[in-house]
Amino acid sequence: MAAAPYWKVKQNCIYLDAGPKNTLLGVIITRFTNNPTVFLAAKLPYSLTTLAGFKTPFNAAINTYAESETEENENTLLDQIEIINGVFKELFDFVDETAGGSKTIVNLAGFEAYKHVSTSTGKPLASIGAKLSTIKDVIQKLLFSSKAKPTTKGTLLITSTITGGLTLTNISDDQIGIVTPQGIININVIMKNNTEVRSAVSGVKLAGTSFPFNNSGFGPGTNLDPTTVS
Image (cartoon, rainbow, N blue to C red):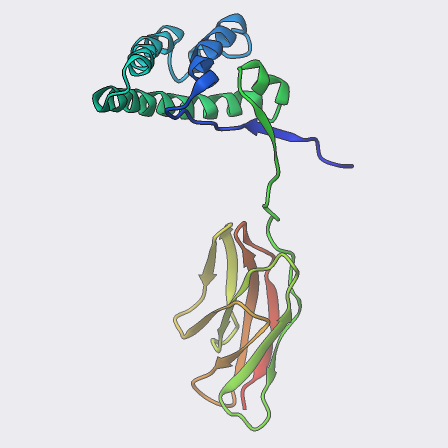
């Protein structure tokens, strides 16, 4: 079943040629006042009285600049525009939070809504065929390879020759914890499907775990079979 549309406030700012947008603050105040059960006064970033107070110097600056487009009047208007745009940005966030994706509530506040499309793919799925293997005629190196899922950005590879292997724990979306006796631990971050893993000695077994990752965090880890280094 397709997900319901998620709507957000179209964040339009005001400039010198603001035109109809000059009246937007008044519209917002009226909508907030007329719909107190939707736009709760206790959660507003500014009280309705304070919002109304922003209008007086802003409108005065607009009218003065319209009468005489001097540099001084322009700078005064620009200062007021900066203040009002800062207020609007807080109101954008408030209405987005209140609307929770509802186009009706965004429009009820006096704002324009747009359909928000998330680019998040979520955490990657486990890699396929992740393994360590020997490299012909090469000593003290193994080859790590795997087939990544389309949502994978890279792979965190942790290997070690410590007897008994490693105990790894996924502490959070962006942190892997290693529980182990003292010893050497190899850590590789790769952005492709294979890499060489070095070992300080030959004749030992190298084991480890690989974790695919992307901007959303780490995917499930894959334990690698212990493999003897030539």
